[in-house]
Length: 290
Image 1 (cartoon, rainbow, N blue to C red):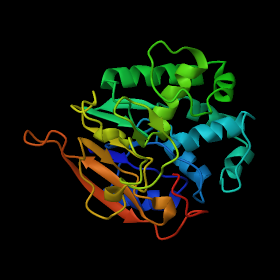
Image 2: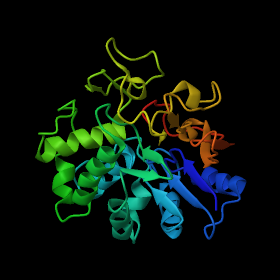
Image 3: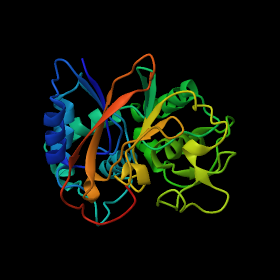
Image 4: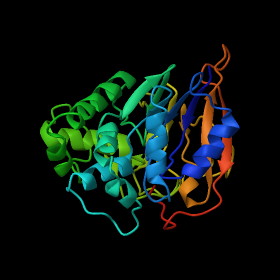
């Protein structure tokens, strides 16, 4: 059995098919974990969702910010943006089945010793706390109150974690960390405007994975979301940085779609092999906000 982590798909169905062929993926033998942003901006979000749903049991998906946006639009909480490519899902006769499937997906999980998230983890959270806090949002999304949650999900405040937070504020901080985070201060204050490579952050902020004393530093961690991150754009070979692996290689922006095949050994328990396919086109806008 082979186990793969795959970066952001964003509706890029044809590259996904080519990547699965390159992996010699077999649903009866192998497992894939997609790190969120399954849909939007790319041309074939509907086909991506249908493929992942067909592969249920051998394909596992995290929710990213674009997936939550789809849920909010479907619930009538938000309107489509001009550059969204979600209409085919919203018009599909089995729309409700797809929305219910999305609502059942995870925001964080641990797999073979790795912690998986879409965007990032706050420095004060352990791996166990991260999964537990994600579970609070997951339970809310699966509940009858999911549309009310989505109504209160948007916003940048509070911008730091406090265990005493309750209600919409608590869930908003969890969602923002797991699906939007790139930079934060050493004490965990999040920043959501800078979307460029390392070095583009405002004074006093650092990449979330570079915070000294981060409590998940002892756990290998795979994430997506950050397509402008240098090592994830082909500027150099993606590698573990601070024990984290960024796998959004910008497929929807004309980059690559990348999978990491786990090959742990006694010498390298977080070992992996990278397999990429070129995407050969651009999404609807050359926007860094993936």
